[in-house]
Image (cartoon, rainbow over all chains, first blue to last red; front, side, top):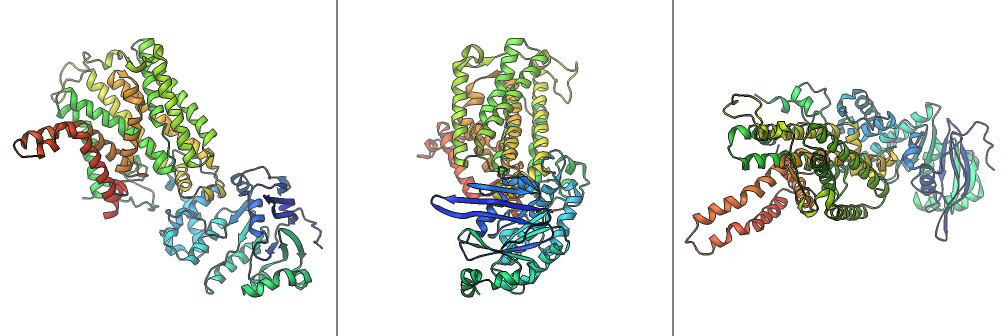
Length: 259
Length: 371
């Protein structure tokens, strides 16, 4: 069912599996993600989408299978090392530095991609380049006016934007969004979707998007991968995947109750 | 006129800092007039102590304050900035003290001995801190604290058992290099009415070394590296996801704090011409450092200055003060007994409980909030 991958994938999982006791949360998922494509990963709650993300970005260790970035096996590397190889992840539940300002949150992400973290004897604000980059990213997510506000004092929607800002600031080659618009008010959603469009339009980035809203998936995705009970059950062009019986049965039934 | 170090000192002020003093403070000024004034009084007071007060007791207290400022500041790098609770900090303090003491005792009272002793101590501390960090900073915070407690207890037992080298419970008394002995005179004539003898030189050695340690630590916590430590304290999971190797950063912070504590221990030994379990290794000193950092204000480094100064002053003079109060209140029922000098520890404890309640963010946190 899957399209054959002709371009060398930027990210690939081979037989990726994790078991928690007797429960298999992700079951033998093999999938490649080509550069310049946006793949939506859909499935009902509990299908293993976030767990699949956690296995890819290194928050969880696989029971079996491999994760490859640019053809290199990263299965045994910690999350930080995978990030340094270009895997960038935004989290479903907002996961920021609560007592540091919005600007400092983003600056830390910029600083990581600039590999400046071990510099001990310079003062942080002497690196104007890092600060300017962080401010540019805040501008992109329209949070410039809140640069001195701590995440604890930001609205939920602004926290989501900051979460995306951190991901952009890391300048990864693979962008992983986990329900970026969850819990956002209707008028805030377009900002995030425009950002994802922007990233996609740049061409070389590989984007993975876990999303529940079917209209979002339809408008953004080049390809849809369906997970159900931890297994990959459908993979292909959005139109054909959405029309397939297995998706109608396994996913869209749940989607109705979500909409 | 506004002092230079108050000119541009908001934490997020991103303009390149101009003031020389602010540069020395790594762009991290006091950010509160009251705090700035307090710090100026403490630093000038410590620098002027030999000129202002006669006798050895005030100078001894001042030297102890200097040493504990460096020690508490190094502990704040762990506790306040990185969020690591270690109980092994006095072990590194003790290693510094013993390094200097053993070298001067065995190799004779020369500067080479001081240097070798300190270098050996620094190497041992760095190795131990790195080993403890790499082996145990992966486990949950509470287990890490327990491990440091165990290691520190083992070190204390070891120091008292190896009495042929360490002097056991009696500790080691030793001679200082010629220039630091009371009989040495730097100048034939007194300066500002004070004859600059070896004791005064030893005091200024302690003062400037502690100042240097503090300024280096201030630079480190305000560096890109220091910002990563704060990120780890705030959310270690996300720091790791951003690409920062949390265990490596935490271990580095432990090693830096251990090195600074080692230097502080060496300074105390030089000042006292003695090192023993009670001056550098005891667990009660560990509690003192913890209190100094918490009372002063965690994660500010200036809190260590305020906390250490208040704590050492209270330890040294509360008893004297209570003696006066006791005499003044003779004849009044109950009260004289309550302020009897023997009860000074009770009052010290009461003072600390009150200050922790009154200033939950520490004294520095309180002063900065009012601003």
